[in-house]
Length: 285
Image 1 (cartoon, rainbow, N blue to C red):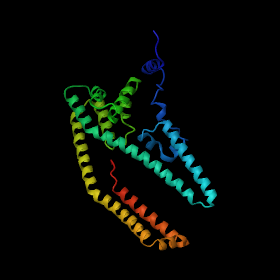
Image 2 (cartoon, rainbow, N blue to C red):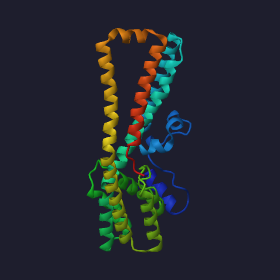
Image 3 (cartoon, rainbow, N blue to C red):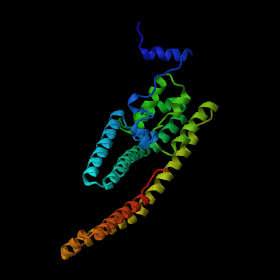
Image 4 (cartoon, rainbow, N blue to C red):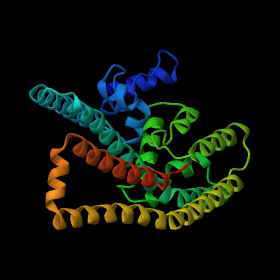
């Protein structure tokens, strides 16, 4: 009978001969000296579920934009285009943060149902670990919760201990309540205490947090509308000035101080709008 290399490695781990070296897939591991890791950090890359191929695309985009702006700066003989490199990095980081937030929101949508189903299974006498590993059938295949449970099952199949697998459960999801869930689960497995009441309490706290978050979104909706209204009014005023008195706009643009003042005004308006939107941004804390 022939055995695969993974089965042999797992058998060696179980008998204590050597450490099991098979870990997460390589496409999610970024070298510490990589450009993406140094610019955005390992935690953000993991929470955004970025693969090595996507990381290479980001690196190529950053290098291309940097070279393009450097050439423009040499042609115009000014350092102003180089400032746009920092703006491009901010945009790339914002895309990663948005992707990470979408994963957290998708996980949070199923988190309460996951806790309640797990508590129900434990109450009926089911082993907590069995209830945890078999809870994936309750969720769709493309959901974040299903993916986290699948990774947990793979970790157990590779020979990792229960505590290690549970502590790595949804480790790449930046959800604030997951650490409490993992700690409670590990303590319950070690001490043999009942886990159902703790899971139900966690579900109630999660529901309260979700309700409070919805109230916050409703409260700051007017602030976001005000930011867009202020920006829209500024654009309308510019259009009225340009159509009503185009000679004055042309004179202001031709004057060295006038063009600078117009540029500073536009930057201040955009900065104010972005600042107000970031203040009203909802995050899972």
